Every structure is written in C-alpha cells, then in structure tokens.
Length: 143
Image 1 (tube, one colour):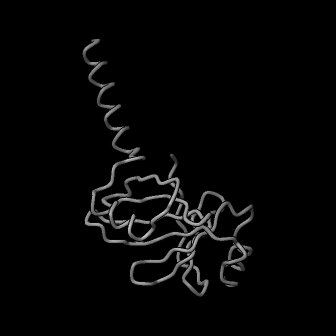
Image 2 (image 1 turned 45 degrees about the vertical axis):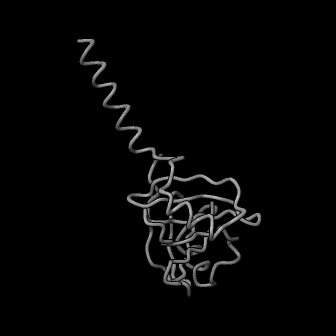
C-alpha cells in the first residue's frame, strides 16, 4: 500500500511540475533574439506558453512581455499601458458591458505589425482590435 501511495505521489508531483512551467530556461535561439531586441531589460523571467516561450521583463521602466518560438522568432510583444491609452471604442465597450475595476491594460503587437488591445477585468481578458472593436473575451485560467 505504501508503494502505491509513493508512486501516485510521484506521478502527481511530476504532473504538477509539467503544468507550472515558470522560470524555465529558454532555447539559446530565443534567449539570443530576446537579448538583441531588448538589451538592458531587467527582472527577466521566462515561462512556457504552450510550445513557445514567454519572457516577462521591464524595459525603460515599463512592464513588458514577449513570446518567442523555439527557433528564436518573435511572435508578439505585450506592453502594459494605462486604461486612458485604450482606443475610445474599447473604453466605451468596457463601460457598457462590465462593472468593476480594470486590473490591467496592454497593447499587443504581433510579429506582422497587427496591434490588439487587452483589458483584464473581472477575471476576463477582453480583446480589441487596433480601432477598439471588440474581438473576444477570454476567461483567465486559475493558477
């Protein structure tokens, strides 16, 4: 019985480690691309994001993140912004459809130059295009 308990405990521990992939070591290509693009960044922390690698950091006093694939190609950057920097249509949508306080707002720039905005409110990430048109709501996963 003790043996089965030990085995199941090990399986649970390994599974948990697989889901919480924070502070991982990125592939050299991703790390090199990041260092070239964001030299001088501080508070650098890498995590897995599916098959990709997300790096959270501070650049020139601004909180940012970037997503790289394992070959070092930048997929997107996310820059924390003030709610007042959102497009007017996005601000109006949030006011009409949500009660509560905005937790965070960010500008997301894809590798192809496409810009989106993200508003975190009431446990949802509300996504908008560059003009402030509502795209979708994404429920935040529980940690």
